[in-house]
Amino acid sequence: MDIDAFVIRRAPQWNRLDRLARRRRLTVDEVDELLALHQATATDLSLVRSALPDTELVGRLSATLALSRSALTAPRVANWRAIRSFFSTKLPAAIYRSRWWWGTTALLSLLASLILGWWLVAHPDVRATLIPSPEVRELTQPGGDFESYYTSAPAHDFAAQVWTNNFWLALETLFSGALLGIPVLFILWENVVNLGTDGAYMVAAGRGDVFFTLITPHGLLEMTSVFIAAGVGLRLGWTIVDPGPRTRLAALEHEGRTAAVVGIGMVLTLLCTGAIEAFVTPSSLPAWTRISIGIAVELAFLSYVFVIGRRAYKRGEAGDLDAVDRIDEQPAVG
Image (cartoon, rainbow, N blue to C red):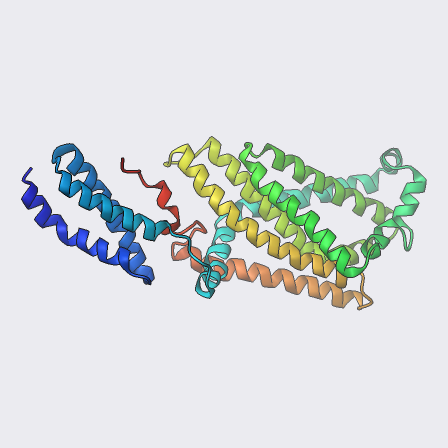
């Protein structure tokens, strides 16, 4: 290969890369161009080293690549544009992308809770063997454990306690999916049993209205958040079994990053449910008002996912990091 012809043909791109790498501010399109030129120049450097051993040219390209790598991997301070992009595109698209996983998870879990609750209500002998009668009375009587739980601590302390417990549960559910999703199934089953059992004892005691009045305001969004975490966690586990056209490692990295985006969202939704559970659920507001608040918040969240998230997903957003933030995935040039 003629080294002079090679340099003449490729030099304009190397010079453009050098200019972009030295700029203090870049537009989104320029960042994409910088990344593409960096990758192309890295390929050129490999070619020069193997086929055209020219010390001066190797030094020039290595210096240019070092400069562009620094520009691409330099820590970037979050700005309002990045924050807005996260909440308007990445987060809703990541949740929408896994809608069939968490939607199916929600449907099957709620159906299992309903069946378990109905079965327990229809079999008082089974209920009697599960929980002794004195404990049942403590749980179901007016002002009993089920009702007093929501006023067991000052509202702000209770909100912080509930939020901390729930977001750790959500994160555990999300990332334990990497263990083939097996821990996720156990967490889901525990939630199914708790919901079905508590509901059954309250309904059997003639206090089903109290049960649904207390769990609906915060429970709709809270359960949705848990189901989303579980669905994304199961998808993460399934990626190990079937990575598709990608390598198993690349697929797992991609799904892991997307799960992290969803995790941030669930921390925020559960912060909202914690506030509702502490300040709305046990309040003196009429039952219809408390329930309406819960339904309105749930509908707002679902609209966010299925309207904003769907639009972002249709534009090609998948909730993953931008290419510039994944520069370490590119082949390293030795």
